Image 1 (cartoon, rainbow, N blue to C red):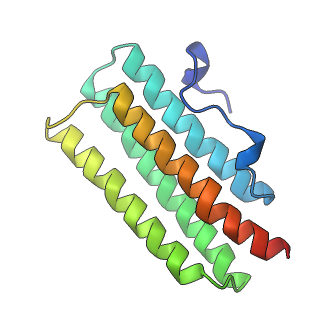
Image 2: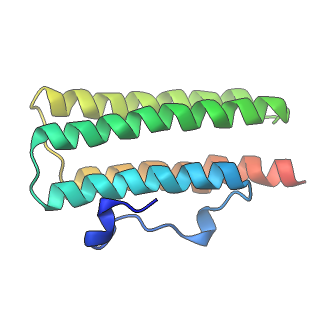
Length: 139
């Protein structure tokens, strides 16, 4: 999937270290990273609040889809920390909903700091919680 983000240096390029070794999940992570990069590209082009809001809505929708698929997989494979992982997902979704709501209410704008928050939010989750389940499921 080609994204708008290829027009500018990506804030969040995919790296092999993000791979959990489950192709379906890796592809979903790549798509989430692509949406974050699309948001950055739109911000750098100076696109309006409506466009930024739409892209953030896309990020939220896809995050919900991804988290549901990941949680289903973890339950099916009887991951020992599935409940804690699901709670992390709930906390992450709450943070992104708050971000969207602040943008819609005009209480904030999409800035480089917001982009770094989103990048760190996803990267830290993948490199922490997701790689933990990957290690257990492989073992």
